[in-house]
Image 1 (cartoon, helix red, strand yellow):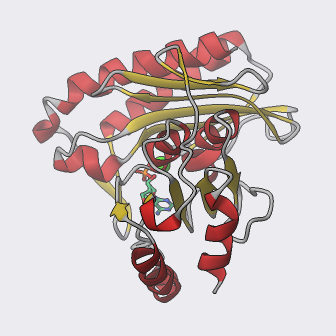
Image 2 (spheres, rainbow, N blue to C red):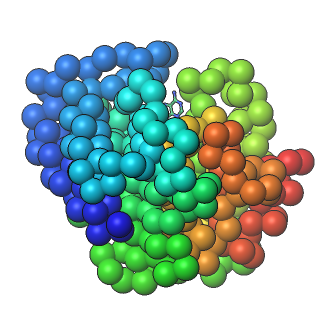
Length: 256
Ligand code: 2AM
Ligand code: CA
């Protein structure tokens, strides 16, 4: 199954990378305030869903651009974000990814996050470790908050969350060494798994933004929970991912 997911992600990624060079001609639709979709998101999603349905017609599929999930009662559910980081894509900022995960009875089974620009494929299988282009991944070993590099995302499309976000950011910026805003939740989580970031948190995301990255972080020896430190609830859409040394410190810092 992981092989099917990786192949689907790479095929969609090849199409996305080709379209990236011709993005000036693309049609962009506004879904809501600061939320856009391009023909490329839709084409990539159709490619991936077609591939998964061909192999696993009974599985459920939940994907960013689809109107309603298919087979919602099936034990196996796929979460697909065909292009995570659409805003980056539209602006020509080369940082976005295809994100695919499968969950069985609510438990993550496999995950792929593929960055078509850097040709980096992050993958994980439940209990089988996390890999980047077949090299084993491990979260960072950083123990001190003041040395940590963290990422987060601005909930610009959820204005009511702005104040809480700003308070949390203020505390994090004072406590930690540096901040990056990548614009792709899937890649932020993959980067925590790879030890490139020590921590990442964000609120107000969608299940397909975080489903794959969640397993990558766990299989790389990190902790991925919601922002309160409780078990991750994909539908709630809050996430805090970090290495096991920093995770409890961040749970406290974000709550304070
Ligand atoms: P997207 O590019 O697939 O839309 C950046 O903060 C992260 O938030 C990205 O992973 C982005 O995914 C996601 N995002 C953007 N708009 C969103 C929205 N309206 N609701 C939830 N997540 C969103
Ligand atoms: Ca997304």
